[in-house]
Length: 351
Image (cartoon, rainbow, N blue to C red):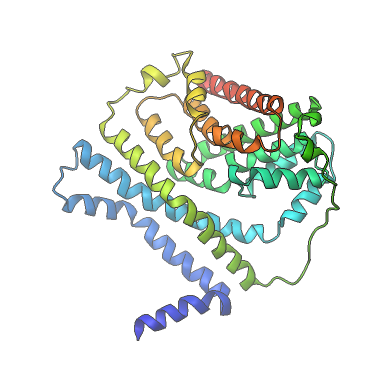
């Protein structure tokens, strides 16, 4: 009976008492979060493994970081789901289509932060923007920023590295997205869209229905956002942290400095070349980046690697081939890769 009562309360509390649900969830979240280190130490302590051994170190890394990242991600995705209840796709397209100067690239990249699209959404999103009359360069600023600089990436970076690295990545990602979109817009490459895309009739943009949305509705949207995003990315997080734990436990100190250190001039382009063929989202690659940094890799090099994996994956280029001709795809990859290379070299030089 008690289990049934708890299950019924969990189902009805968000709808009937949304503010009480948010407060209760926040308290439970805080208690769990602040006990993670004690939990990790306790679990490793009862295992037949020496805490100071490579395996003990790797297990502690995994047991502590996996729930920590998932808890942080759940909280931020829930909050962003509520915020996104004010940002419908129709409003986003209308807002971008109404601006044609350079500031539109900055606006598009900024909207990409709060609009969680991945490369699998690239084609329908691209078509919708073109039909709405959004300029090509502005569209690319949005498409670069959305997968690379979103709440998932920023939450993981904050949880694993702290707010300074998270803000640094935010600034760098926005700079690459804004600059690359502006350059592509200046090149006037609309003729290199596939013919069927250019021949599509433009549609009028509107702000969408402005019906009454209650607090309970917004809380429900936040929970739906958690189920959709966290439900999809948690395997990548667990896998990425497992790889990071293996690196953390068994790769010798400063081993990565020889191939990804700031003194190796070729480390940044090599990192970009290695990252492009890979397919992963930020949830999978950031824990690996954390472990690489701990073993002596340079910050600029690993940021370049991470950006290339997320923003320039080969699968995304294959998907975009449906709507872009090869010359425009090559220009997109070249411009974004150039920006990532500059980011890597600059931060290796100054940090």
